[in-house]
Length: 504
Ligand code: HEM
Ligand SMILES: *[C@@H]1O[C@H](CO)[C@@H](O)[C@H](O)[C@H]1NC(C)=O
Image 1 (cartoon, helix red, strand yellow):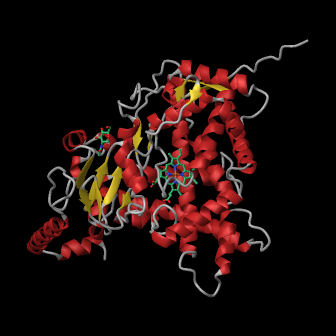
Image 2 (cartoon, helix red, strand yellow):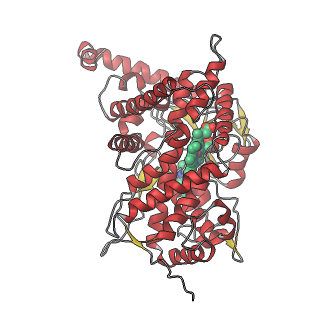
Image 3 (cartoon, protein in one colour):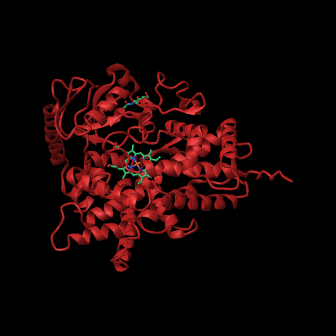
């Protein structure tokens, strides 16, 4: 039914009556859900709960008073669901690791289920999730994750990126799309079997869509969709645009899958899609509960999605911090010159000999804090956390910002400082650093992301010195979306003098 006809048909009286019944029912349901031993929390409005207590412009640092008042575990009602917010390393480890089997599921909120479906890697649950995750990890390993093959691929791509940046000739440029494209190419090579040129207009369009999808999620129409999907479905707005853009990403993936089906070679799988199609053919005739086309499409989209924005925005943060802290940039370049020099590409084996560079990358991730609330989990059964009752179905949020900015843990919590990860000149692991989360559902791409960050970052600093454009103050402000990314910026990449070889 179209929106105007729905509303034109209803008289004001019917509407009011309907709303009143609805509100009463909703607050009844809500009260029924509250357990006497629930974690404490602020007063909630019927239906809307604490939705408007969140500051949408800086959600990760809103509710500060609430945290102060109620401590390391409190409950809210957001977008119609009970939410438990957990702060501090001991409790975060309790929920993600010790009770990892309880908080293993993803919540299926209306918006997220509509966009990501409930298939694939990020959103699926139960046996289906287990099977997809195991298969994907195995396939990534077969295609060279943790081996020399994938490292070579990253090095090649980093070289392409440095070439593209060289063409800017030290003039101010926005590194957003070149970096996005380079990072995306690594996961595209593994999943689709090919990379895309930086000036490929079709792929550029796709990356733009991806970027838009990430920001559109935060629009109020999308938040309303989470609470009133059955109404918002009929209304125009940002959520509709989001659905349209998501469809475009999906049809791009569908098209690539179709091409793979046409060219499928029974001997050899060249990439993730090939490998998945082969797995599917094992079940031809009898259906597998887990391996099906819906999951193929969603897994592929999830890898593309999760593998692009996260690593790309981390690298964009890294360049910003380099330009903002020239002395630190200089120290990293000294280490690069000492350990690698100018005549060969960085490899993963160099990391061990480069504690300062490694520490700098870690502190970029700590400061960038790109997933401030982790990715939400859900309790699959009733449980008890810190003595409080947490009901089955409650959404679990772990506050990674609090961990990454904890003044008790970090010498300069709000300032970029590689020393946080150093001790006597050696790299020091820190427990209060969980950008990839922890437990059984930890980021599936952690190893890949770490390899990409190390090689891309060192390649870039080997070739260039990053600087603010003349008379410009670079901003370290963030843009809110599915991730916290830097607001768009221009930067200068000055080619470094290659050291003339001294000798006879
Ligand atoms: C700096 C880069 C990255 C960061 C900070 C990051 C962070 C995260 C976090 C916090 C989660 C949620 C884990 C949880 O629920 O406990 C996650 C999940 C995931 N990440 Fe990453 N990620 C990054 C890069 C990547 C890359 C390159 C890939 C590509 C393979 C990837 C694929 C995934 C997938 C598929 C999931 C869902 C896992 C599941 O639900 O089982 N990520 N990531
Ligand atoms: C998360 O932690 C940050 C930093 O301590 C704090 O400002 C914010 O209020 C916290 N948010 C929630 C929802 O716990």
